Image 1 (tube, rainbow, N blue to C red):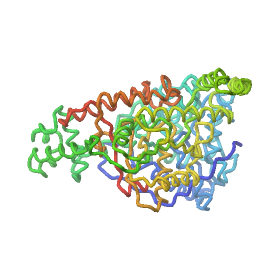
Image 2 (image 1 turned 90 degrees about the horizontal axis):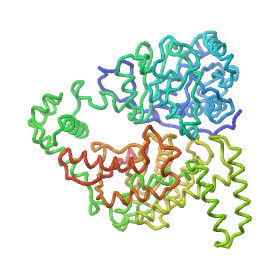
Image 3 (image 1 turned 45 degrees about the vertical axis):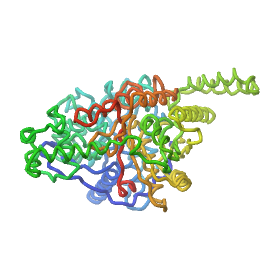
Image 4 (image 1 turned 90 degrees about the vertical axis):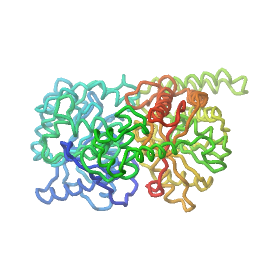
Length: 639
């Protein structure tokens, strides 16, 4: 079996939520919780309960399991509970949804390997009780293999609890658009959207298999209980389609609407496009908090195409907002209050912190300038003491050809630098030989991993200098959880938290910046944020103010942001030039994320320009561009 991952961290708290609201438009029972950790705890509770109930009733429990990034937190919590003696897997039988085809079982991309590394190797499940489609079956016997898989499910008594993820194409399992509700386990051709989503795992879309074996929708719908699980903003649009849209073969997940015991479990980010979360006032009475009032007024202004101060009573009454109008008596007071609230979020350099200790946590060596390159310069100009901590090496995101280019430079420059050219040639030969042997996704030689780390570090220092900061501002933490040499990482552990805490103790920051992106391809931003939260929880000095930035995949909407930092045309240009310093990520990045083919600097430029343009359309002061930030409350910062 593959090497076991380290034990998951202990989770002590109970899950928060669910977040309530009217469900008039939801055609699947839906549970919304604040974040992915709450989701993991709640699903683990449910699975432990089902295992206990079914094994007591009939001597076994049959689980249908999913792979991908979404279930990882659930599996880690199940491992923790097993180690604590809270759940017994000896009478659990499992059936996985799918597997790429062709796919050797020992490949780092294999779902068989994924399941053993992330769950089975850590619990007392019997190997003969584990069923996963075999990606190594010869093509001529695939039909019989799929039929045998179906028979095994029937012989086990059917699936008691089926866990599902959802792809951006709306697939469940690998049932892509066009799948019929009466299909069973079979070989399918993967949708272009699905292959693009998987491209980061395979170090390029060209390396993603074009086919997969999957349970059919008919098989899935025969499970007695189904949980559809989704996290992150990047899933919000397709989740809303699955939960609130019509049943359609274009979105396989909509067939879950026909199941009596299907439940969608969502974190708040994945639920963002549901009506009860996005525009609850159209469903009925709401509690008009200041935050909800701001969202409603901005929504109304954008829907009518008017500046906030030009909204009329008729606009309110024609768009489900009569109760808000009645609460304030007239449109003027509402308009004025929201306009002032939004305007007060805008902070030029004079309104930003001055002569403070500032600690910026950057998950990868480019997230700082991508997300807050404009603010970094302003904070430095305000005489703040700034440390930028690069939490991971980012070395897996360096192409082999970049290593070749740097080694060629070293070899050519060796005489000038007083180095032995033969030594450089020897290292270059070893590296080239390793590249010849390596398949996409294979772990690099330790020396290559170190070379790629150094490339990212040198780029980070150059980018800092480009926004005015000295090289001494950079700290490279190289957190252990990231040092696997492959896409999948270890859980955040005590050593990661200790390294972050030591930096907090050393710098004693007044202000801390943390990545708030939840849709990065492999969850590194989310894991880094967890490491910072864990360190702050152990930090026994006065807690710093915590600001969340975004930029690589999303931007904070005006209504969610607490601070809007205006940028001039020259300042935005300087920020883009700083991003250019990350040459290994230029032109084509190994892990761009999402379905956005633009380079990171192009996304940043568009988002910063649009934030300012959106503010201008609302009637706020006009600026060329803007960065947006959220400030966490002390309670939020502890999580």
